[in-house]
Image (cartoon, rainbow, N blue to C red; front, side, top):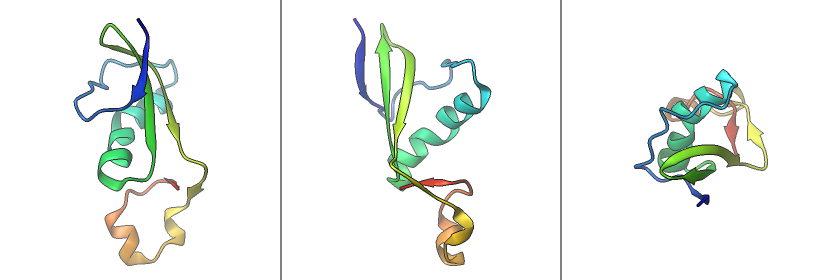
Length: 83
């Protein structure tokens, strides 16, 4: 049965492949970091039999890092930040 739910820290993101390398890279490298460490986005996944079938990251907008003060940039990732 398909289970839509929020990403959890224990989810294994490694095997997921969307067919678009840039989306896979974001999901595997940044989705959890944004949600659990920075609290700047929430990722929802569709899971069936323990396998992630798809994801959506919810963020109504983004902020370019270079527009932040240098002190803030040092503690955040260097890519457009969901807000």
